[in-house]
Image (cartoon, rainbow, N blue to C red; front, side, top):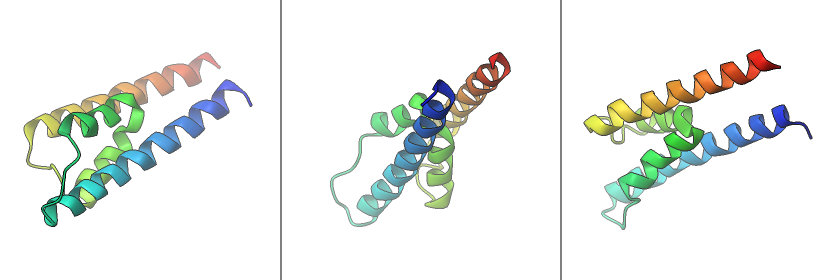
Length: 91
């Protein structure tokens, strides 16, 4: 398996995990259960799950009014898109 394939698998897994985390946290919020810390949700975006985080935020209508989510999730998404673009240009 080459580096490109590993990167694709990584980004797929991290984005699916991020989206599912937002969905699970929304489920817990509605039912007043133990919640996922905001720091962990934001970390998923920083680790490359920005697209999944955005889909989770707006798909589940979760954390969309919080300023730090409205700023940091798109920021990390753009950073990772730029990194992937640089990686592709180096191939």
